[in-house]
Image 1 (cartoon, helix red, strand yellow):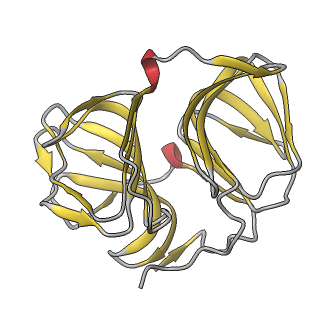
Image 2 (cartoon, rainbow, N blue to C red):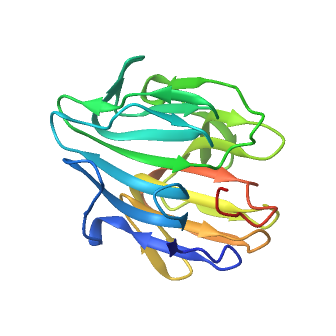
Image 3 (cartoon, rainbow, N blue to C red):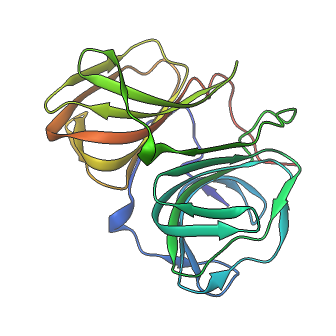
Length: 223
C-alpha cells in the first residue's frame, strides 16, 4: 500500500475532512497521512481508540513515535494524557489501550535502527521558549538525522525556512496559510528537502508539532 509515498513532492492531508478507516483491531480506527507498506509499514497516521479498546501486545521493530491529541492513551508503562510525546525505540514492546478513549498522531518505522532512546515528555506542562521573531519552541527530540519540537507561532507571524532537509507539521491548535492553502486543527503538511517553507500564522496564531531534516534520504518500506 502506498499513500503520499512520493517524498519528492509536497503532501497535504486535512485529516478532519477524511473518513475514519477501521484497523484490524475492533474499536481502533485511523486516518492515513503517508504510508509505504501494508500492515507492517513506514507510516504516519492519526489513530482513534474508542473507549475501552485495545491493541494486542506487539513489538515495534522499527520504533514508534506518537503525540496524544485527545483523551488518555495507555499501556503497561503508564497513562499518557493530551500533549504527551513518546518515542518507543526499535525493539521496544507494549500493549496499547485506552479506557476513556484517545486519539494519537503516530509515526512507525521512522527511526535510526540503532536508536535506543526512550522519551516521554508532557508538552502541555512545558513553557515554550522564544527562538526567533514570532516563534517559541518546546524541544522534544534531536539527533544527527532529525529535530522534533512543538512550535508556537504568534498571530499573523511570517514563518520561513529555506534550508531544511525535509519539513513536516501537524496543527494542534490555530491555523496557518501556506501556498495559499489554509491549515486548521489536525491538518498535516509535508515538504521535501529543499522546498522553501513560507507560511503565515492565522489571526489567533498556531501551535504545531514539527519535525525537520528527516528527509535527506528517500524513505523506504520496512523489510
